Image (cartoon, rainbow, N blue to C red; front, side, top):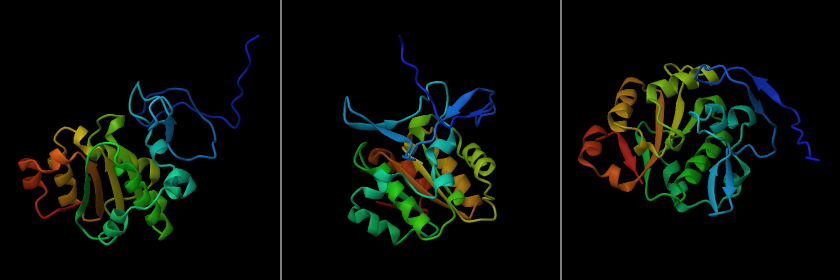
Length: 212
C-alpha cells in the first residue's frame, strides 16, 4: 500500500502574485530560508518549483512574516566585505557586489538584510529578488512589493536587493530610472564582474554606484 503523506497546517490560496488563479499550498516550516541544499552537486537551490513562472515574492522575503533571515545566513561566517559594505548602508549610492557565481554574493546580501532587521529597519521595507527566478521589470517588481508588503516606496525609506541583476535585459537604464526618480530607495545589486565594467554600465551608473 502506498503511504499517505500528510501536510499539516496547510493554507490554501486561489491567487498568485501575478493575479492568476491557482490553488497552492503553504506548509509551515521551521526554516524560513527559500533555499535548500542540492546534495547532488552540494549547491544551494530554491525550494519551490518555479518552472511555470516567477516564484512568489513572499517566498523570497520570509522576514515579512518572521522578521529574520534564514538560519543558514545568520550562522554563516561574516566576511570582511560585510563590515566594509555596512559603512555605506544608509548612503544614497547603489552598492554593487560583483564576482563569479557561487562566491557568496547571495549570502552577503542576506547578511546585510539581517543587519538591517536587527538594527530596527521594518521588515516590510526590505525587498529581495533574484533574477535566477525569471525576468521582471524593476518598476513592476516594486509595484508588486508595495501591494504585498504594504510599503509606500515614494514616501518611506526602502532597501531593494537585486541578485544576479545581469539577467535582466537593459538593467542599467532601468535601475538608473528608478534611482533618479525615487530618492527613498537604496539599491543593493549583485552580478557578474564583466557586466559591471562594461562601458554602458559605467555611463549609466556613473556617480551613482559603489562597487565591491
